[in-house]
Length: 265
Image (cartoon, rainbow, N blue to C red):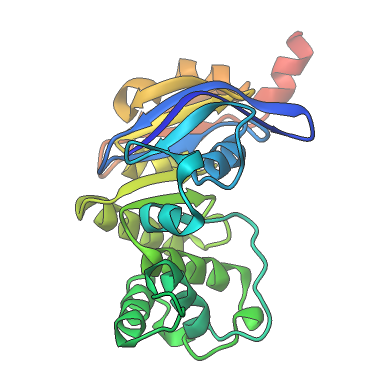
């Protein structure tokens, strides 16, 4: 569904991604992990066609992304960005319905089918109670849920999410990942950048780790989510133990570990 080949990307002459090779098959559910500044947002922007590569390339559904129009890309991939600002003058209902622009005709008018899609997306993202409110008046967590609803309204063939749950409380994070799991079960390809290692390990069968602009680990969660791997990637001490309910590996930080490691250097 999504493929990057020897992808190099950056900003203003500064290279962030350095030769990334990645293939996400149709229907996969994977998390993108790594330290701050490792290139997660840059990779998602490139996969969505929003950041041209310096070299290498990206394919969506077997087609070179550079040859696709914005409308064609929008029919293949929906995105939930990080840190987006809520626009003034739009209700939540109107903002979510904007996700349907790629499905509208030449004149761009919305019809009953688009309204139904918006309602369904709002319901799935547990945002129906926000529908009539102004988007600019929402809290950060509420607006993040609305952005997820807009992505669902746009289309569900593939979802790219950049820290989509970072502003949510614990219950809403689980709720959001339950929703992503249902989308995956229904056949969507889901690729979610996250800092919450444990939430990613709970839900995602595959984990992709970036560090310094390169993929350093990529594989089944049970294989790659180990103490040795996580210590090496995050440069801190931690412990990995099974989740008491699901058995999924979970990371536990060690207080003072970083300071102790600094003294030993």
